[in-house]
Length: 93
Image (cartoon, rainbow, N blue to C red; front, top):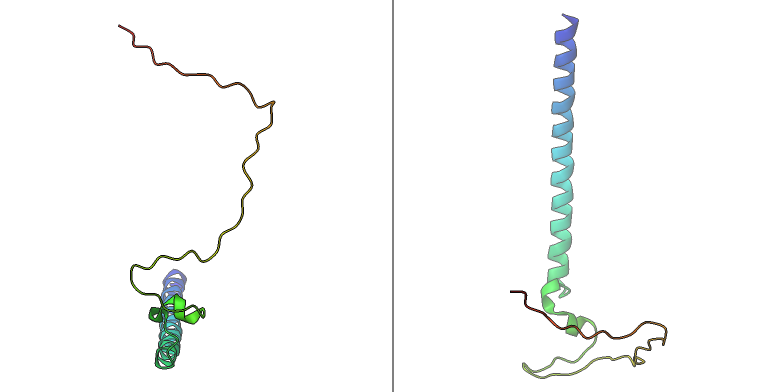
C-alpha cells in the first residue's frame, strides 16, 4: 500500500507542477505580448527598419553607399615562410 501511495503522490506532484508552470507561462506570454503591442503602438517595432532607428537617412531603392571602411595594411609575410612550389598534375596511364 505504501508503494501505491508513493506513486500517487509522485503523480500528484507532477500534475501540480504542470498546473503552476502552465499558469506562469501564460502570465509571461501575456506580459510579453502587451509589451510588444505597446512598442508597436509607439513606433518602435522591429519592422520599422534599422536605418531609421539608427539615425540614418532613408535611401532610395537601388542606391549604393559605403557607410564605413577601415584602412587595412597589406598582409606582410616574412621571408622565412617557405618557397613557392609549382604544382603540375600528372596523369597516370
